[in-house]
Amino acid sequence: MLSDSEDVSVRLRQQIEASGPISVAEYMRVANTAYYGRADPLGAEGDFITAPEISQMFGEMVGIWLSDLWLRQRPARCHYVELGPGRGTLAADALRTMRRFGWTPSVHFVENSPALRAKQLQVVPSAVFHDTLESLPTDTPLFVVANEFFDALPVRQMVSTQGGWRERVVVRNNEAGFAAMSGATATDDLIPEQFRSAAIGSIYEVCPDASSIMQQLSVRLAKQGGVMLVIDYGYTQAALGDTVQAVQSHQYADPFTHSGQVDLTAHVDFFELSNCAKKYGLLVAGPNDQGAWLSGLGIDQRAQILAASNPSRAADISAARNRLVAPDAMGALFKVLAVYAQDWPQPQGFGL
Image (cartoon, rainbow, N blue to C red; front, top):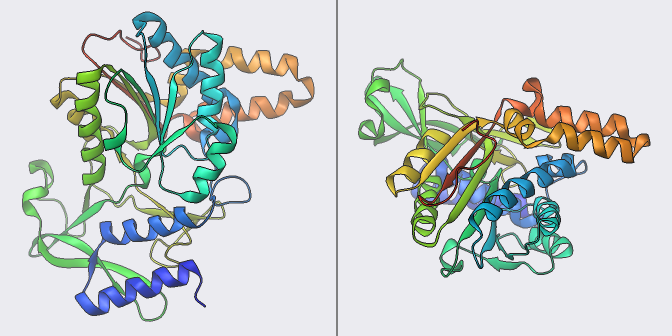
């Protein structure tokens, strides 16, 4: 019997043999659906670790940030929504902090992985699960959190060739896996004017799924009220570059081998997300560096309190704080963006 990952590779090979090369986006979609569906990929024993798993301080800062907005706006009812909530660690830490400020919103998780849903229920038993955004509540304001969610969405890649810009596609690479190359589909109309004369081999990425999700939520927030917090690694201005990467056992891997066994991600285009939100009438704060945002919310003070209460763990707490905040760790690579309804208060942590 084939393993799940072998089955994914076989299905992709058969699809390519039957119908020809597939886009990089389709390859990422199929591979990541299998990857996240098979098991919990997080933690030291998994393939990667996210900020909430590094320290409770991360989720607590998110909870403080959300609570500040709630206290200043005071909606009668509201909902906490998290996209791709991992093990539920961020939500558990944030909700615990929010209770200290006197509010307990209903909890909604947009999650498709059965393995991760089981983990999430263990720490947030009250969570209501959603396969898509469409079934989220439509009655009252939404407090939406997306931490390392957008980076896992499939990107289309366009490559500059002698004949113009072409969609990058995935083909079979003997028995070693797959390989990417320029395809036949012309994509010049998708390339911003400033990049159309870029050097041969240059790559430009777009993420239609990210734009669609941001548009849907922007419409919701404009109508229902609320805020959305996006935390991820990415870039703040339109740029060229191949950002698709794979991680396995905390090491970089080839994105086009071991399909379904490695975590495939791409850098998030915060410029596009911001423009989507503005187009639908939302206000935008950031993006700011994660380190500056966390520092502005008081993570240093929280680290000192935790260390004083747990002297034997003081070194670990300091190391976790540094990993989240330091520019040479996650502090500068990861960005924080907030989008919010017109009549809502300006969020803290962005130097406004």
